[in-house]
Image 1 (cartoon, rainbow, N blue to C red):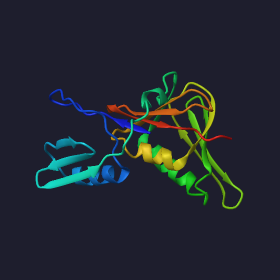
Image 2: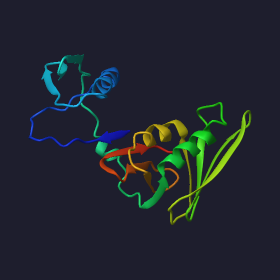
Image 3: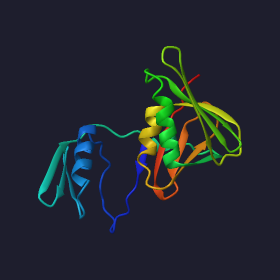
Amino acid sequence: MSISKVKLNEKINFEPVILPKKTIFQLCSLLEDFDGDVKISNIKSKIKFELNSSVLISKLIDGKFPNYVQVIPKNNKKKLEIDLKLFLNSVDRVASVSLDKKDGVKFNLKKDKLNLSVNNAKSGDGKESLNVKFDHELDISFNSRYLIDAASQLDGDKIEMFLNDTGSPALIKDPADFDSIFVVMPMKG
């Protein structure tokens, strides 16, 4: 799960809506090289985005969005700080050993050291160690794809992960962007 906020110049009255995934990807594509204001209209069961000469109209998903705020970890006090580029490259290298996307990347964390590993009986083992800022000990596993997806969205030089225990979700933040957070669930075993 990821959350991003944008500050608006004025207060607006807009009921929450649920957009189809395809609409979000199309909108992201339109916004990629766009620099300007977007006019958004919510008409009954449809939403309209106007970006100069481009217009995107989509049906809305019927229903009420779940209370995502309660999913955001609040007691994750164990802060892990890592160089973003090193982290992305290491997770990608270690995960590439496995042919099975279900294999988790295991984190073995000790004071200022992160040992990453993947073990797969068919394709072998992958291991790497990184120097990090961390003052605790913890073993936890994650789906590498989810880690890479979240970390790839960060703009700064560092990634901060706030952890609690083996079974609790990780809260990922970009120290350079306080308005975006990511929640990644751990894998069992």
